[in-house]
Length: 70
Image (cartoon, rainbow, N blue to C red; front, side, top):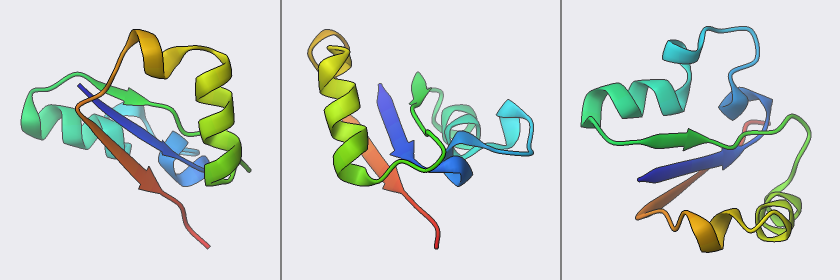
C-alpha cells in the first residue's frame, strides 16, 4: 500500500482520478494507493492531520510519497 501526500497538485485539482499521481502509480504497480493530497497543506500540517485521524496507525503504508509544487 502506498500513500501520497501533498498539495492540490497531488490531490488532482482539475483532473480525473485516473490522471492523478496516485491513480497513475496505482495503475502501473497494481498496488492500493491512497491519495491524501489536500489543497494548501504543507508537509508538517499534513502529517499532523494524518496522525490526528489515526490513518498512519490503522493503514501503515509500505511507501509514502510527498509531492508539492511551487
